[in-house]
Every structure is written in structure tokens, then in C-alpha cells.
Image (tube, rainbow, N blue to C red; front, side, top):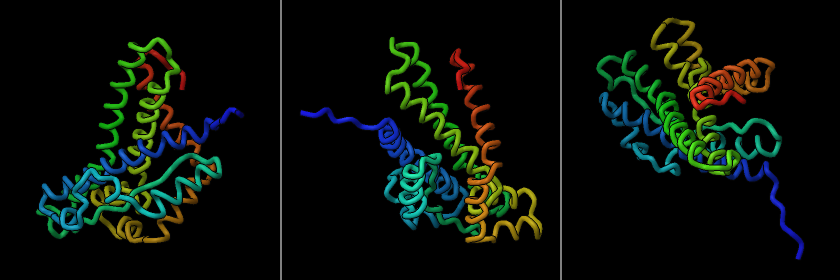
Length: 219
């Protein structure tokens, strides 16, 4: 009987999916939770105050883009369906909206720390440093650091564009925030532009800080 071989790329993709679903669910739940605590129940009323990943799936960002990225060999990227937020329900519209916007990326940073703590203890408890479990938790660190930094980019529809407007409300930042579909086009152009490598250099820099804590600097 011929031996069945599965490519490492496919294994990486299958590893990426559950980690991705967990990470975006935590991200969107953080937005919904902070918004609810600050007086806006829009996300709760829409059924988004949940850690169930199925409630946060966006057909394009959560399904089509990751599959297309895998098929093309490009970086595995994607996003979830944005949580509905009505800033008019906030006591302080700009401050509270900034807190809600930052809650998502911050949740990914905290999740990265949790994955890193598990990774750190596993590397000291497991004899084989190439263990798949170690690789999975390290990938969890990478993915959530990526989501943390990526979502802080000041390009709509990312959280960074909301934070930029909340900190510096003026015609320019308001115009940026209201780009709509054009913002997504600009984001895609950025991802496929030469500038993307500098963003990934930032990700590697942050990961190297984590690895230096673990006693390794191999990124």
C-alpha cells in the first residue's frame, strides 16, 4: 500500500485555522465586551458578545482570503466580521471608542503572552525542541503578535484608523475613517507592496524580544 504523504504547507495551514479562529473570536469578543461595559449594547444585541468563532466569521476575511493566501503561497492573513459599535451610546464618544478599538489588539497581545508562557514551559519540559506542540504554541505567539500590530495600522477598516481619529479628530482623520471600500483596497495594496517587508521586520523584532526571554534568538 503506497504511503500517504501530507505536505508541510498543508499541515501549517490546518494548524493555522483553529488558532486563527480562536484569535479572532477573542479579538471580537474584547471589542464587544468593552463596548457593552461602556454603555453600548449593539454587539450584545447582535449576538456578538460571545467567544463562539462562528458568530464572528466573515465570508471574505475568514474564509476566502486565508484559502487564497494558502493557495498562492502568500502570508496567511485574514480578518473577522467587524463588531457593531454605536459610539453615540458612549458617555465620552472619543475616549470610549478608542478604548473599544484598542481592546481587540490588546486581547491578541495578551493571548500571545499566554501562548508564549505555554511555549516557554514546553521548551523546558520537552526533550525534542522541534515537537509539533511547541511549534503550535509558537505559531500562536506569532499569529497574535501579527494580529496585534496589523490591527493597529491606521488603515480602514482596521482598529488603528478608529484610534487615530479618536486621538486626533479632524477632517483628515475623519476622511480616512470614512474611506469605506477604498480603505480595504489601500490595505490590500499595502500588503502586496514593498512596504510590507518593513512591517514584517517589526513583527520579527517583537518576536525576537520574546525569544530572548526564552533564551533563544533564532527568528
